[in-house]
Amino acid sequence: MKLWELLGRVTTPEGTDMTLSRRGHEYVIAADGKDLMSSRMHGSEEALATLGCAHLRKRPVPVEEPCVLVGGLGMGFTLRAALDELPADATVVVAELLAAVVDWNRGPLAPLAGRPLDDRRVRVELGDVGQTLRAGPRRFDAVLLDVDNGPAAFAQDRNAGLYGNDGLAIARAALKPGGVLAVWSAWDDRKFEQRLRYAGFTVETERVRARLKQGGPRHTIFLGRLPP
Image (tube, rainbow, N blue to C red; front, side, top):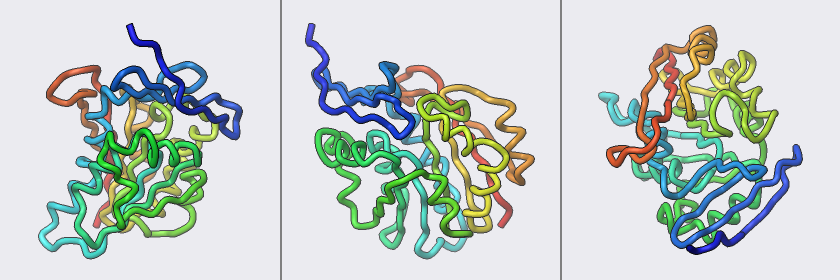
């Protein structure tokens, strides 16, 4: 059996030990030894983008120069799926807290999702995704959040603020009319659905397989829609 090879390690501002490891063709990013994501299962991360950007394709009149925020780069699969959904004049802003994760996506992880960071439509903003959301009201047509393992913070305590009432109000203010907030989660969360409604969103949830048609555990995509 092949052993895991450590490719990268970084300590987050809150002291979490984040690692990138490889065994054969599989890559895993872990937080304090607990797996956050694996290259074997990324279908639900792609579904986050396809569901979160679907309204931009379905409008009778195409949105000119759409702007989408991807919160949390991960292994680049959500970013790749968003780019595949969007037109040539789109802008995709990637908010990533850790410069090391960006470096991993330009290095050993780059081929997994077809080198999405090389796309000229991509803008990387290093820092907390909350700062990016607060920076520009009505900036985004869609906000795609895959931070930690969902609304219950897993790796970073600060991420809990994204999913509380104040964080959802900030996300709403960052969206254009008719915009969509899409949130990836490893599990259902009825209280989070209630908070989305309280923040003024119309809420839908989609349960998707980690490997889509190939199976795997079920994950949840929360979709909060604003009126046009």
